[in-house]
Amino acid sequence: MRYKLIADVSRSLLLARWRQTLIAAIGVTFSITMFIALLSFMSGLNYMLDSLIINRTPHIRLYNEILPSKTLPIDISSSYGKDHNFISSVKPKNERLEIYNVGAVMNALKHDERVKGVAPKVTAQIFYNVGVIDMLGSISGIDVEAENKLFLFQDYVVAGNYLDLKNVPNSIVLGKAAAEKMLANVGDIIQITTSKGERVQLKVVGFFQSGIQDLDKVQSYASMNTVQKLLGETGTYITDVQIKLHDMMLAPAIAKEYAQVFDLEAIDVQTANSQFETGSFVRSLISYAVGITLLIVAGFGIYNILNMMIYEKMDSIAILKATGFSGKDVNRIFIGIALTIGIFGGLLGLLFGLGLSALIDQIPFNTAALPTIKTYPIDYNPKFYAIATAFSIITTYFAGYLPARKASKIDPVIIIRGK
View 1 (spheres, rainbow, N blue to C red):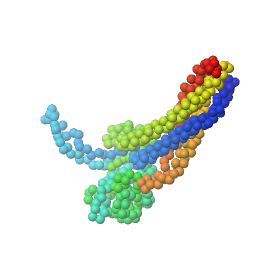
View 2: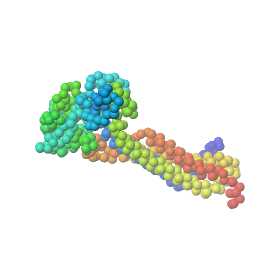
View 3: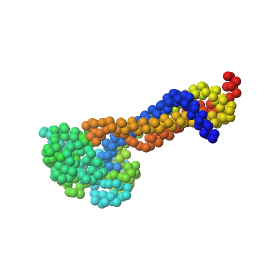
View 4: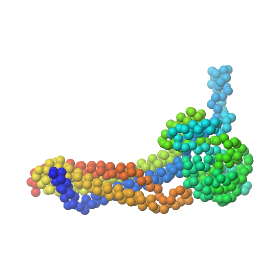
C-alpha cells in the first residue's frame, strides 16, 4: 500500500509538470536514438571496410620464403670457430618457391578440427603485353571452387562467370582496373609474358574488382593448371596454402604452431592487416564516446528539471513529510520520477533507433569501387541496444539521485514557518 501511494505521488508530480517531463523524455529518446543509429552505422562501416580485405585474406597463409642462409660454411668450419666472422651481401638459399610435400601438408590441415577450409594457390609475376608496352602484373592460380567457398570469389567477379576459369582452357579473370588500362573486354584474347620470358595468350572470361584500386591494376586470376603450365611446372607445384579457421582470433597462435610443425613461413590475418584493425578500433571508440556523451547530456537535462521541480514543490514536499512521509519515501518519489523518464524515453529511443537504422539501411549506396555494396552498411547488433538500455537507466538514476537526496533532507518546519 505504501509503495502504491509513493507511485501515485510520483505520477501526480510528473503530470503537474508534464511539459518539462516531456522535454526530458524527448532528450533521452533523442540520445538513445542517435546512440543506436551512430553505433550501428559505424560498426557496419567498419565491417564493410574490413571485409574488403578480410574476405579476400586467409586467416593463415603458409608459404616458402626465400631468405638468406642463416648458417654459412665459415661458421661450421673448425678453423674459424673462435673468430668473429663479418660477411656482407649474403645471397638467398638455393631453394624453390614451391611448398614441398604439399599433399601431406594439406591433408594434415583438413583433419585439424580448428580449420574450416583450405585453398591452394600458385602465385606468379607476369607482364601484360599491351602493344609495345609491358605492364607489371601478378597472376594467381586458384582452385576455383575452394576459392569461392572460402573467400566469396564470385561476389567480386563483376563481369563474366567465375566458373569459366575452370571450364575454359587458358582463361583469365582480369582486375577491372587492369582491363580498363588494357582496353580489354570479356571474350578478348590478351598476351602475357612470364618471368621466364615465355609469351602466352589467354582468353578474358571475366573482370575482378576487390574495391582496392592499386590491387585491381595488377591482380588477375586463372586456374591452377593454367598457371602451372605458364611456369612450366607439374600439377604438384603450389606456392601458397590459404587457411580459414572457425575462430579467426586463434590465427596468431595457430600460425606459430604451423610454422614449427611444417617448417614453413606462416602469417596470420591480424599481422597482415593490423592497420585495418587499428582503424576500426579508433572509429568504434569515437562512436561510443559521442553516444555516451549524448546520454550524459540528457542526464543533465533531467537533473536540471528535477532540481527546478524541487524548488517549485517545496510546499508539497514539506506537507508530505509533515503528514508522515520519511526522507527515504521522498527520495524514492524523485528517483521514481527520474527512472520513469529514463525508461519511457529509453524505450522510445530504442524503437526510433531501430527505425532510423532500418531507414539508413535502405538508402542506396552505389559506387563503382565497391560492387558488392548496394546500400549503406548497418550492423543490427543486440549489444548496442543492451548498452543503450543500461546507460539510459544508469544515467537517469544518477540524474535523479542528487535532487532526490536534496529533497529528502528538507525540514518541513522551516518551509512551513517561512510561509
